[in-house]
Length: 423
Image 1 (tube, rainbow, N blue to C red):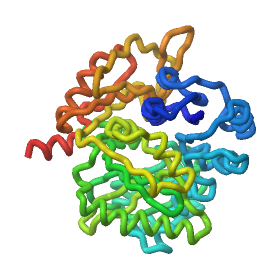
Image 2 (cartoon, helix red, strand yellow):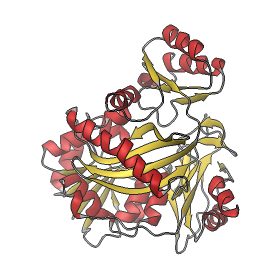
Image 3 (cartoon, rainbow, N blue to C red):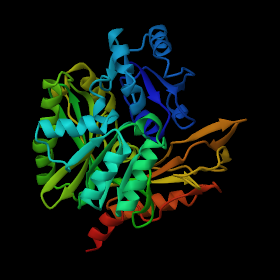
């Protein structure tokens, strides 16, 4: 099978690493990729925003299968264009990708199909949004409706913080994504990520993870795209997984089909496990980043046929097998992230990881033959272990061998699970 992977981040490096292990892979390309992905695939300088250029490349190379990593091309309709040209594609249509492209769309689906989630209201102007916040009080959650690269959500513990978040949205801090806001009830509990593949008719549950969104230790400071993750999430017991499937995933799949948006791709449900059970915080329509990195470390099965079955409506014919060993990843980010940071800072050394560990590239490039950091989140230092504590120790030992002066990380990734293991 000839495969094209679209994307350039840590999630795509993890997918590339796993896909490249498939015995059915014959040719493997990535657009635009990154220096880490270049270890596994041939990088191609195709602008993925130019859908016609992507289609021309696929025709020229007789590509059999396209895997779309990030959300932006999916929301922009790249899967529709490729399918219209006869290509098998992993990723939802632009209509189905609204589950991530519009927070309000998702909340409306939840309301229509009785899917447990926080109470909410949608607003397209600041005065009405602020009046609602003053009426509801804090804590309360303010979300930019559209895609904001994981940064458009404010969990406001005070009314003033919520009002400021509304101003940020309507004053353009998140561009077009903030033209509408969703304001929703604060859910108290423990967060978890749950992943399923869906081909429109069948669902294949994958695995659970927990990520750390806040930049500071002890889960403090502003939200980021994710500072680390581990899998599995202990809070997602067998009973909680069954409830999530029955109460959230299956009604969403049915609801999307009934609404005329059959979903094909990965359901990434961001959950809050509350006293009432699992409640949906948000949906994403691609693998999590950095959750994908720990999932790929734990997946024993060949990824390529599983993704292909998802794209071709044959998901009932495949299964996914997982190692029991936990995996943990720590994000190394540029100093200043999630605010402003210096770009093109040199990364002098990345150590060889060895068995059961891997350093995934998330925001790197080669400049004049030298590796530099180009993004906010730059490296994902990942390891497995017999326990989360062991995986954590291995990941930080590996991270401490990275030579990058402008990098920083949280030192407590996985702390909840490690405390549980000690109890």
